[in-house]
Amino acid sequence: MTTTELQRKALSSFLRTRRARLTPEQVGLAPGVRRRTPGLRREELALLAGVGVTWYTWLEQGRRINPSPEVLGSLARTLRLDRAETAYLFHLVGAADPAAPPVEPPTEVPYPLRRLMETQSPAPAFLLDPDWDILAWNASADALFDFSGCAAEDRNLAWQVFANQANRRRTVDWERHARRTLAQLRTTYGERRTDRLTALIARLRAEHPDAASWLDEHQVQQRAGTDKDIEHETAGLLRVDQLVLRAEEDLQLVVFLPRDQETAERLGRLSVSR
Image (tube, rainbow, N blue to C red; front, side, top):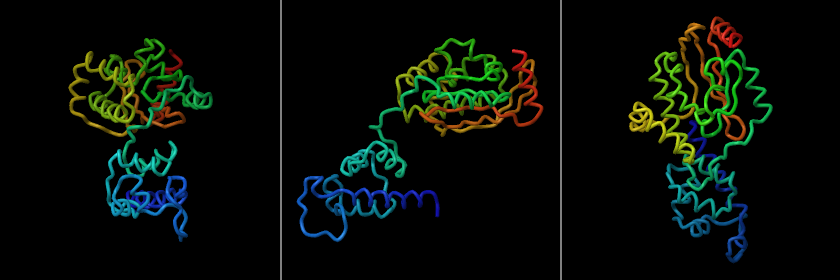
């Protein structure tokens, strides 16, 4: 069974169980005659949600249907879903909920997560908030990227990719990585649309013509890691796998994991010499 088929099956079960827990009295309907099964009938739910009975039946049966966000929102309200259930409904259909509030960046990094970041040395590691602002970093990351030497408003991963000139020079095939960064940033912006991301994209457009040109290509890509080679002027060639690990409160732990022992040793020396 494919992932899509599994999602349709899960959607079918989810809708049936949520419909079954509603009583006619809860939605202002008369109880009527004795019901063979608990909950609302399909035709009752369809009427209350403002959709066709046949259409809703097909949706609950897991057929190939692509409901709009507005219809999904109406179903969620009719079924009296809470925030987590509504998010799950949209996830099963593969849609984004336009009414969902954006995740607010945390005010501080949870200590266990900071400790996990620190223990990655000699691998450079740093923590991002949902808008890609860099909240914390270990000594190896600071030795490689000089985050502590940046102004606070410049400590954003997307901004660093373009504005950190030393990083641009060192990154082998920098353009490929920069384009990839923008494609993933556009995906994040589509999900969140926060003032912070809006201002960041506007700043990239204004100060970096290559970013403006590539943003106009409207490429999108899900957030994920990649392999990366860095030609450091003193440490030499660093071959790493860039891993992106999602954590609580929508934080991201980014780790530059050495692909070989030589890279690990060079990163260790770089951190000590800092």
